Image 1 (cartoon, rainbow, N blue to C red):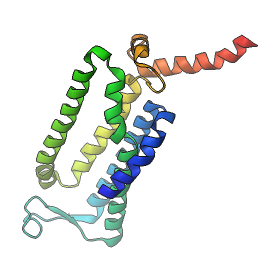
Image 2 (image 1 turned 45 degrees about the horizontal axis):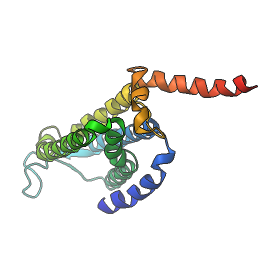
Image 3 (image 1 turned 120 degrees about the vertical axis):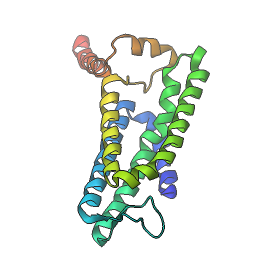
Amino acid sequence: QYVINVVMTIPALLLLDRLPRRTVMISGSLVMASLLFITAGLMGSYGHAMPDGLDGTATVTWTLDAGGASKAIIACTYLFIATFATTWGPIGWIYPSEITPLHVRSKAVSLAAASNWACNFALTLFTPYAFQRIQWRFYLIFGSCCVAAAVHVFLFFQETRGKTLEQMDEVFGRSLFAFKRVKGEQQTSQEAPSDKA
């Protein structure tokens, strides 16, 4: 998984400035959500409870014996990592620095990084206990969070690709809702040729 993460970050870094930020984040969220829901479905359908734990590990209370389903779950896991590495992995660090004014940028980016690592720390702490209590259903929570992220980006994340720092006030100033801004920009670009004609 670590090798996949590193390798798939390389094309993301090379192509990121050519793709709209919103499209990358929304599509990444939806693909990751689909993979998590598939994993939950496979684990729920083909797995079984291990109330006493597995091989002395008390937090492992659900196991899967079906060979095909196990391989499919491994494939979903690898695809999830690859999707994250090409979408939210790099953009999670880039977007905060793009949307903040210069006079608060260092503080805002520091706060974003601290929040990111605090959430990673919390996730590491509560994930084993969540798997112990609700087993495969925990993937449904992760998948739902990815769907919520896609909706949140669609509604509120303005497109910043190709914009300068000086343009951020204008980018965020027109409307609270990002999808209205994107629609307006598309109409403007479509109307431009007819104006010249």
